[in-house]
Length: 320
Image (cartoon, rainbow, N blue to C red; front, top):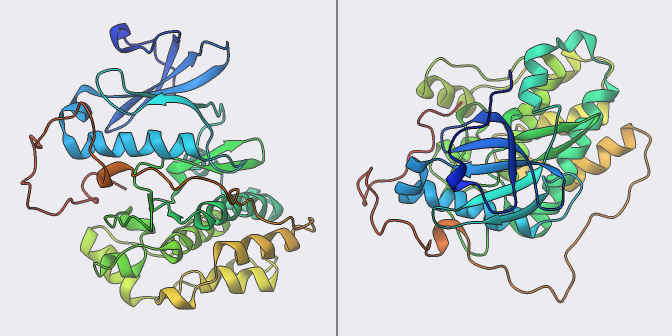
């Protein structure tokens, strides 16, 4: 992506931050490379004006800020500071100069990658998900666009759709990576994240997604009724235990899938690395604060300007 000049909306720049260049623009926010009050270069995420005016979008941004600032794990994107509400809402994140896995997949063919590189990346993602699942959190949107690269290491980010299972949540996802149970209208779970990781693993290892479709209906039929080609046929160098677990990650029934922790251990074993115990929160940690659509969002409109209040939010619109 070609860097852009800083946007002129300096009136919404958080105090103490200096904008350097625009890194990208999404459907809900603008991301700048910026210098924070401590002199670090950070990715500064600022919601668009339209995001702040639409309650559902404002809640998603607030949810991302709150959750990102709670977590500390080397393979979950690091948040430094943020404000979830109002016209000065923002989130300052660790900056990953190499961009996302989606960028890397667009620029490199699978054939040029030794198997150790994707195994290393998948081990990092399984580790980050195992940490979130250990806290009782479901990510809900594991896909290459939400995986950030730093050398040969990776971190999962973009927690706007994540939620604590103890609090309940609204099912969400991206159609190419979404588990069959979400297509059926069931709630998401850690097993749904594992399915998304299995789709991503197939794409990283083979260069193609295991399920294809030109429309949402085509994708739904593929995820519900078809089976992915065996990884061993595409990647004979892949260790058999790892191939088997990654194939099971795409099981149609959530209970048949391995956990993220099981995947983490198998991938580290295949890499010949020591298996450390997963990071867990301290026993005295306070109960998580309600987040996202499970708590009122201060400073946002009382009623949405778009979408009927009684209609179900459609997470698939304009998402790939």
